[in-house]
Amino acid sequence: MIRSMHARSWSRLAILISALLLGGLCGACTSSRAAWVEREVATGNESLLVTTIQHTLHERGFTVSGGLDTGNRRVETRWNEQRDPFHGWRKRVILEWTPMDGGTSFHVRVRVQSEENKSERPLDRKYDKWKSLGDEPSTATGVMLTLKMRMRDYKIEVNDPDELFDPAARN
Image (cartoon, rainbow, N blue to C red; front, top):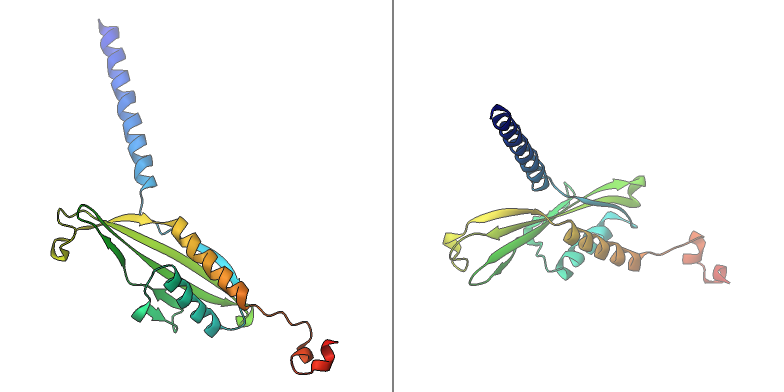
């Protein structure tokens, strides 16, 4: 009798410890850590990069408007909202860049935040209850790949600078 009670208490303790460990692991999985996608992007100058960033974000369905801060080298788009009668969500892009190699290439970081509207009336803005769904690395990777592909289209390789000004030097 005493052995069975002792065995039950150990099994309950093991279940309790397992539940706590599993809960801790699940809490770590849903943490709100930023998921940045980072790459090096080669370009001729910063103004070309900024223009390409604007075109890339527009192509991917994000509105830049007043969120462009070239002084701090940062873009934060408006929330791209989707509202349905039973559900609502929104996403936005945060993109940062820092110069490398004297301004011929840049270290670019992209993050896509997403939120879900938990309101019972998702079509009515005054009842909005936005809850973070965390970051979307897959969407951030898509934005980064689109940016890199656009930059590849603009890349001009020149072996000899005299080729640009002397047509006879090309032959």
